Length: 74
Image (cartoon, rainbow, N blue to C red; front, side):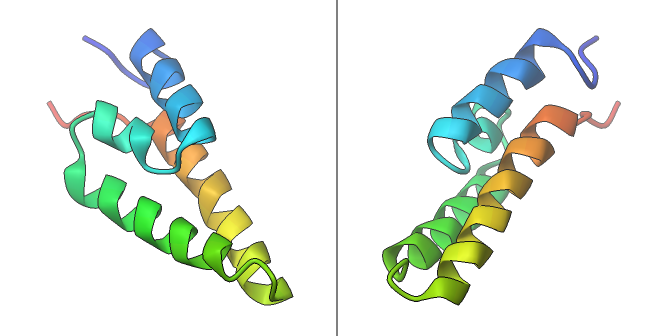
């Protein structure tokens, strides 16, 4: 059984560090992966504006933490 702090979660967190949502995709959570990728991608696209850049950074951090703390339902 893999739980929080498992090697799979560490790998997922590292994946999300490089590409937001990739860690969720590795864990098989397609909807969460698409949402994180889309939200962060759109906000980083408008990075010339300060507020979207901050929001994108926060969502990117959330994607990493979410991938690291994910615990599959039994």
